[in-house]
Image 1: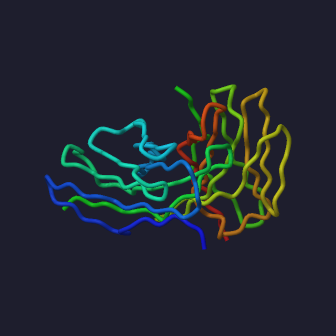
Image 2: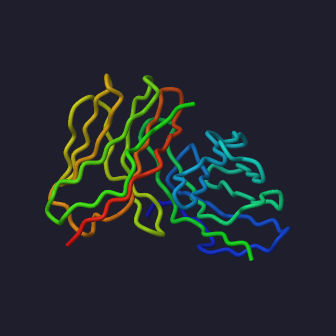
Length: 112
Length: 111
């Protein structure tokens, strides 16, 4: 079955530590996206990529980094520069047209 | 900055009633419109999309689009407690495939 897989489901980060969230899709989608969701804030775009080896900053990119070396994969690194990383992180993918997104199941990151 | 506004909630309706969820958008170039449902602690799932002015029906759900008024709505008929969730309105413009989301409205259906 085609889908989009995020791992891990839960992640705990210590202060000053970098962590990487995985996102893999087998839908042959061209574009991939990372969102952050905080209670009452809706979805905020962190980074997106429309093609391999290219990506753009979203609205809240500071403290995050991404790579897009393969069409299927778009990992997100939360760096120590992100001062308030506790949130629900959602990865999504789509074709480069107007058909909308498919979301992964999310990663809940907590700073300990 | 392109904006998508959803009327503030939460919205509470009795079981069997019609729930009406509304959304306005700022970019007149917007071409595609989506409604996602998100249960607490889960990721959003697409329930309706609409491209053309008018109504689109799918089971108990009807999406309505009025491009002149920059307005899109979702009607849920015969509301069930299982419809209790947050509903996100999203819009694509003509330039790329990137969605702009509203903040969502939480619907509660009372048994």
